[in-house]
Amino acid sequence: MTTVGHSLAGLSIAALALPKGRPLLWYLVIVHMFVLFANAPDLPLPGWGHANYEVSHSIFVTMLLVSTLGLLMFIPGFDNGVGFRVLVLWSLTWLSHMVLDATYNHGLGIGVFWPFSDAHLVLPIPWFETLTWPPMTEHNRNVFATELAFYGTLLILCLLLRRRLHVS
Image (cartoon, rainbow, N blue to C red):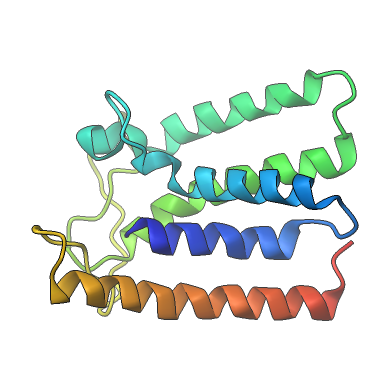
């Protein structure tokens, strides 16, 4: 999956989850964090991302790193009501990365159970394809367009549902 799909999925979770009535700067920071966490397993860091796919896409490694977010709860003045909800949803956004990557039809799946198992999660959806090299090809434009159409529609539906539910 590309950053387009992951980012739109993260924004969809944010749209459903974030409370109303906060300052614009708060939304900008928090929503950017949703996008960051949605893409975290693919970040190009040493020993991480696509350079070390088993580690960055392992549910156990992810849970360990996500649980460190819980340390924010011990910061004096941290808003325990909304703050806790945002932390849980950032974690869900990060975990969604693995499920979304497993839906791509390359047949390889992802090693979500590393280091305890070599089993791979494979949930292929036929119209989701991976990018190829070189990057500027008709195939890759179609990959981006498919993700934009699918996950963009999801985001619109989440925004409409948010409006209907009046999330507070």
